[in-house]
Image 1: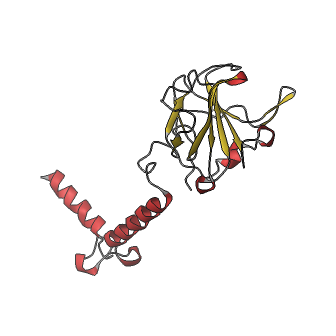
Image 2: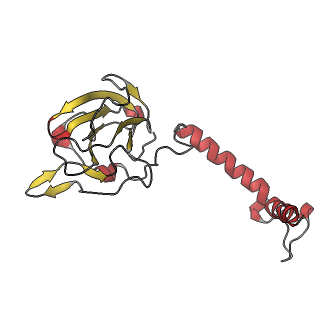
Length: 201
């Protein structure tokens, strides 16, 4: 199960949190961002609601099956919830572009309002999105299109390659000779020396 922040790294700030606010209760987390900033699905699922929605102006609600972590996520205040071509019933993947930040409805500035329900759609059972997002990745990176198993396989293969480059236990390879400190050289050392020789020439 892969979970993502709703916007790319560096494109948003952390705004009004989940909890009491101005004599009421703010049942979500606000993410101030520039008007038009891309919004991504925090997890895979099916579009449950999309379009006009009271205080949000426009919203998108995604139902996440158990295989995608379960629960429901709710995104609000965009100008046009259908701007990316989504419709109710569509399947979206974790990290998929779903909307753009707006300043619609009961909003005092461009931002995304994110609400989370841990099980089914139930507005009375919303939880703190920040806790739900703990450990989430940022969308838009090179790994965002890979599933959990594929990411783990890539990580394992990367570690294996690094071991080959650095030698057993990171101590280099005797076959490559020794460096200035009298230690076995690794392929990393050898490549660095080749690079220096190339620049010197």
